[in-house]
Length: 272
Image 1 (cartoon, rainbow, N blue to C red):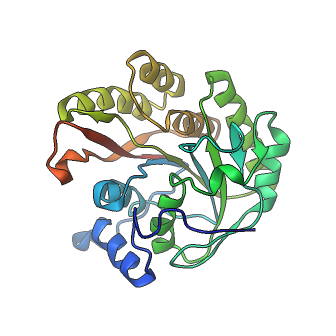
Image 2 (image 1 turned 90 degrees about the horizontal axis):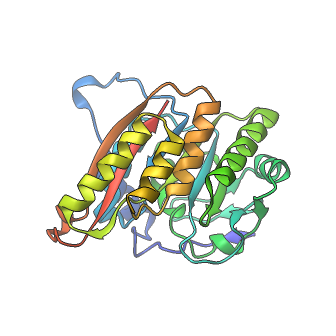
């Protein structure tokens, strides 16, 4: 089946040329050192708000990494539709800059390996958390496939089960992958409060401590919507030999809107 864009024209431009120009405004250029090598990342954390707010952070991440043949997109389920862990296992995602095919072999292998992940399209039809990653990915690579995975609230053991299933499926299929964890950070607190809370969560990510992140977010009541995708990504990265994580950028929406009383935090992290 074909999935139509849910937030083109609102979160980002729905016109292909305008969208390319919009992405260009957010990516990080390095004219002083054009030979700077891109990072072969295992996973990343990238935000999913409207590009005018979080585009600089997403751009800071995507401009520094290689894009492999297959990208596993993990994100929170904002709509409440579909299964608890919904994997879209076949079809095409239509985007303004061109169509993107689902890697059905890898998607099916993940579902076969997991007792939690289910094949489901409904969760993906109106969900923006994965879709907003695609214009940045398409800017840097013309052809790649995706495995879209949408997650509701999960326990730590469930995150561990999904991470084992993803890594097992990647090894079975021999895929070269990037695992994207789509997440915004603290929601609707002051800039000072959000920055402080988010720093404590980011510290756990930079330590590659999946359980530490999960527990910190729950213990400190941090409204990080993509806590489960990020936990799963870190658990996968650990199994895939990750050695370090780099903070590409952190900012809040208040730095764009000027409203420092009700902000959303955005973090961009590269795990390699």
